[in-house]
Every structure is written in structure tokens, then in C-alpha cells.
Length: 241
Image (tube, rainbow, N blue to C red; front, top):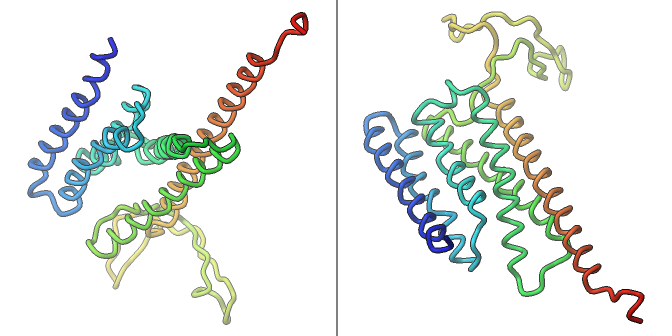
């Protein structure tokens, strides 16, 4: 059984790689954003396998599968339009990312010669995961600015607050009940105002942070239970004194 489980991991990773490679060919004429996402996925799917080798640890199979799902998720969203056809697909991925990177951060700090206390391990897992989220959003921002993608997806809103709308310097003005928008005199086919990614970015980071907090708390409680059991196991019964 151990041999079959061990062989299953590279097989699953290879299958995911083939899927990403096929997608790369299918997206050949679909624009830079989709091509680059499929190409990056070819690298992402090998991350769990490489991580096992670097840490010299075997990830639990459910975590390994979860990592593969997370690696394929952005490609499914971008290339197969899951972002637009599957409700909350983007938020599901960010929440999953919070869990995955917190668990990986915990495994990394726990693989040191002297494992830190449960508090330190949980804190590292949390901050590692949140840091990955920040750099992911940096990547989305630079992708949108440099390559004209729409990674930080817009949200349709119906009111805005800005100092540009204020009556004086530093005063905040407000527009409410926005139901239409025109650019250079041309009306756009939308029923509100585009926030240009702010709401999406903040929601992504909040979902990722929620996943990271949940994972860190779970790992902390699990560590504490293990320590209590070890302590009880080493205590000598009173009758033997």
C-alpha cells in the first residue's frame, strides 16, 4: 500500500502537467494572459512534489491533492472561464490559498532541528500565508499594468467617495445612485461605476487571510493536544512512586 501511495503522487502530478500542456496548446491564439497562465501552471503543479524533496517529508495525500487543485485552479479560472461561470471560484481559490500556504509554512518551520513552540509555528504559518497573498496581488497588479490583463477584476459599484469630487482641498465628495457611465462621451453598457479592482483585491486578501487564520488556529490546537498527550504519557502513575 505504501508503494502504491508513493507512486500515486508523481502520477497525479504528471497527469496535471499533461492537462496544463494540452491547455497551453489550446490557448495558443487566445492572448498572452491565458498562455502565460497555462505555462505557469506547468511549473505550479510540480511544487508539491519538489517541496517534499526539499523538506525531506511526505505530505499527507489529502494535502498533496489539495495543493494540486490549488495549482490548477487559476488556469481553470482564466483559460476555462471558471471565474465567470462558477460562482465565487476566485474567492474559493484565495481561501484555499490561505489554507495551503499556512500548512506549507507550518511544515517548513516544523522541519527544523529544534521545532519551535506551537505559538511560533502557528504565527509563522499565518504570516507566511498572508505574505504570499500580498506578493500574489503584486503579481496581479503588475500583470494588469504591464500586459493589459484583468487579473484584479473590476466590481460594479453605485456610489463613490473621492477628494476629486470635493468642494475644496482635502474635502471628500460623493456621488450616489450611479446607474450609467460614459467615457469620452461614449456610454458604456454597464449600470454603475467600475472600481478598477480595489474591491476585488481587498476581498481576495480578506478571504486568503481568513483561510490562513483558520489553518493557523487548527494547527495550534492540534499541536497543543499532542503536547498534552505526550505529557500525560510521560507522567508516572502515583501508584508507582
